[in-house]
Image 1 (tube, rainbow, N blue to C red):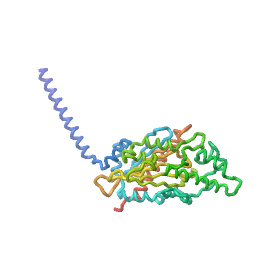
Image 2: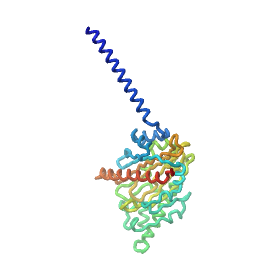
Image 3: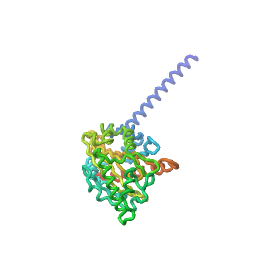
Image 4: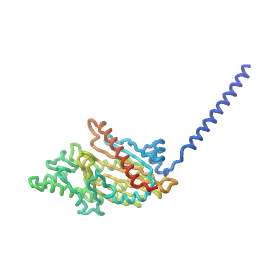
Length: 357
């Protein structure tokens, strides 16, 4: 009897196990059928998940039309990174065409002035850039203590060539700054002498070229999307890239209540296959705040929907402000503002380029 009862119990348990397995399989099928198939291009899907650390929930929100943004892990303590994405019902080609007109594209309340450099850079390219005592004050500028980012040679030139007793001393200093900046841009674009490889305005020297090259080396998604892009951004005049368009532009910006800053940016626009376009940007100079910066915009057609594309934006920057005491507090504030800025930028672009129903 005990044997029969044991056999009966075993059969019952086996039936229950089979029933549970059947139910689990059924639920799995239901879940699989409920989840929509991904409409991301495979290359973009790989970058979002492997490099930008988007979760399955993030990708689901993105496909449903929500703006998704997140903080990226820092490679060094002074680095901050953010990424965001949104689905846009519009034309990828229209966005890229608008981005080529960078002067119009960049105009905003925070961007006070903007201009594009000629190819090759010309003496007149910085004529529209105006500077005053409010933008920077070079009186008393010396090694380890100067109002804006300059190399030792630039600091010494200001001290030697500007007569601060004259009424036009600030104009003299501004003219020297523009000459130094133009020489730097020409060197960056052609390999000629004059590139600013170190800023000596603070107690701790900043090496923007080294810092920028490190950002590029630690961004594997560059070559994943466009083979050869990393080398091109490192030294574009000696590493041509198939199908690429390059230009440099300058801005004078005043974000909020902080002091204005002047920057120069190198942009590379290139196709990343037949269904994707990319625009990568590298900081060439920043008069304040930024040691180095690397950004990328990806416009990728939605699979199965020719009228829509995914817009992805990412930025990795390094700043001396994230060193020293209270660095954790400053990081929290900067990350919060950076994510908010990405969210606003994506929303503005989506509103601007969404086609009328």
